[in-house]
Length: 137
Image (cartoon, rainbow, N blue to C red):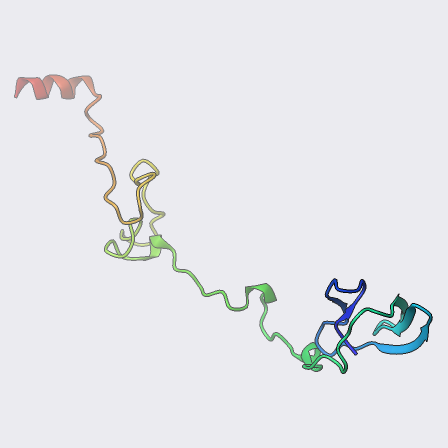
């Protein structure tokens, strides 16, 4: 049997993995003795419920994952970096060669992706000669 309760009405807790099963060895008074897959003998109250038979998919442990990457990544799709995209596809896209993206001041913080970045300040605006030249015009 499998899916064995440890306390009556608490739901099955033991022998739920693929191919698992336990054997009923003895019934003594209010307790039943079970042999677990680890060969441990465990006593549970006799009014606990269980499912008759063993869990299916017993060959699950024989399956090889087959690639040099962690199994938890299974089903996770690859993601493209924004820097590797074109300017129309992502705010960080474009540029010649392997550019590392825009400076943090150019990226709109707190804006939804794709929103235009705030206008950057003119680098010469703080230069004293630039002010006098602009005033002369």
